[in-house]
Length: 496
Image 1: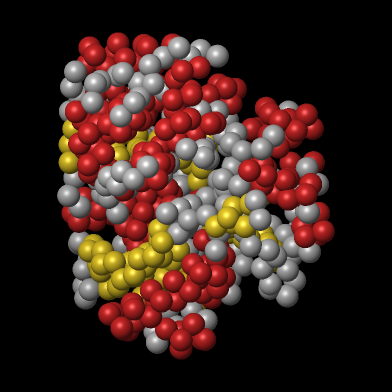
Image 2 (image 1 turned 120 degrees about the vertical axis):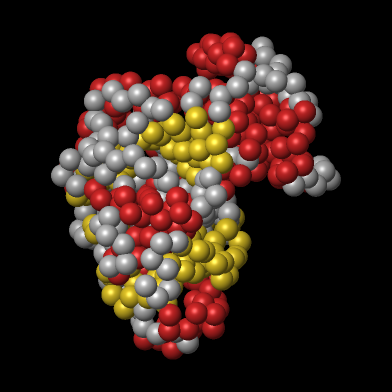
């Protein structure tokens, strides 16, 4: 077939980009067209997203894509992080600057919610893990603090849907991102309206939920003219970035998963791909989540803090005048003493710290454990602790699904960290397959290609990923030492 071009807008918490996916029928090649920074913006004691700047950067990327690809492009689709949202008025105005999920306004909201609706009832209705960043608690916090603004809301859109609205005028929410909100019922596969009413959240603002691969419309005429591109088809990929990344897992296996994945980046999202959600009492106790995947599947997974720990340590080191890139930090970590400073990566103190190394030191000291002192020790402690947490979560996933896992796939930017990959193989005692790095963009493009008819099935999509990607394999090493460390780590997490 003639080479076709699909445009993926891939927005992460630290950066965004517009990528061209060039597909010849067998292999897919990605070309980065435009990259730009992203991050929370402090506004009057709150953290917000600068949506208009992000939209401006997307327009810049489309303009560059038009210059580079011209009329070869078939479609465009957007993926982003989960949970965050925008409210639109009846006249299509954005109501306020959207909050960043790390904004502190949700502190204490979950506990207040449980006094009204039991935790078990919320889980039965949504199947989602309990985290203060979830959309449900963000909406409740807004309803309590600013009910007048909520009353003006005509439409609720999640972040990728906002950009699809700006691209083509659609006002829908795509399935995979809807499921990150804790406002979605995985049994009915619709909004959890009864639960929302109990929290006095107006349900009329929640729009239709559409599947990955839905054709949303054509590029607005003014956008096409401004960017000098055709009126491309706008297609919803799996708009949650992890949903797109899991669509691009290079497995040859089909059916019930005996493979696990880690989408590794600022967050580590570790899970299984299953045909149905797991809503058992044990799933509630383990605080796992059921998020939507490609073809109506569910991602039984657990959010783990991820390389945010290292990113924030690096920022702290820079403030101290020590400018170290990630390669240098990894080299220092490899040379540091093993297992000298383990800690819980998911301790709430690490979600939005003023200074990450200080919080790690306080956490260790409070439990009578040695704290890191050097840059290498902080980073090694973070990587070892992540790997040991992966092992713990892997055991939970096998228990809940009843399926033993043979291999762990690590995808995303974090799959470039060879030290963490090896630590993960060691801790989990499983083969680790690392790559592709660009899993999210690949998944985004491949869903668009399937919508256009260039690909037929999920298995074919994953075959294209294998043909198009360099994969690295890591066998477990030092099993005795890691088994002993796992025992100490488990005891450490049980301490008050």
